[in-house]
Amino acid sequence: MREFYSVEQVAGLLDLHVKTVRGYVRDGRLKATRVGKQYRIAREDLEAFTGSPAPPPVRRTRYAEVSSIVQIDAISPEAMTRLTNTVMALALSRDGSQGSDRLRVETVYDEERATLKIIVLGALDTTADLLKVINTLLDQPQ
Image 1 (tube, rainbow, N blue to C red):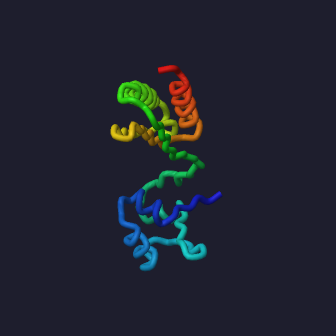
Image 2 (image 1 turned 180 degrees about the horizontal axis):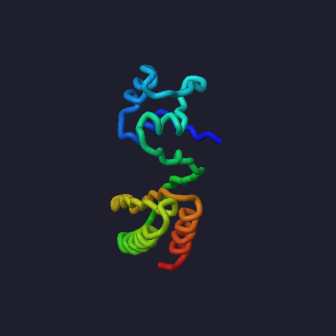
Image 3 (image 1 turned 90 degrees about the vertical axis):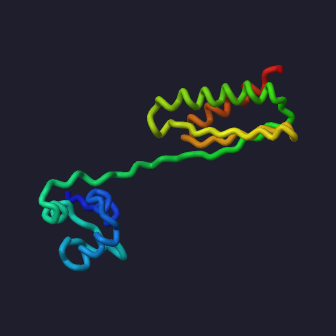
């Protein structure tokens, strides 16, 4: 089965701008097949153009990520500090995990309103786990 690259993939592999690769295709210096409104470059044609073996095309895998904002009202500065430290420690402990499991967490505390917002970005399962921990910590007596 023949392997094909998009113009964007070829530009990334050759460290060129996409417009430069399109120009090579239009000039006939790089052989390509037009599929709809896009070009596809066969692996063999890329190897002939560069004179060296081409790496296999990168296959994208499906990935889902969640963005959530948790708002906690009527929280004291002391409780906010404890909760924030725990949440941040959990998020940082996930940094050693695989990239797709990484959590990004930001916190904002409005002292005047006694409101804490926790912004969480990450994979569905790791975010769900962190939200469960937050819920458990909030259920504990202060």
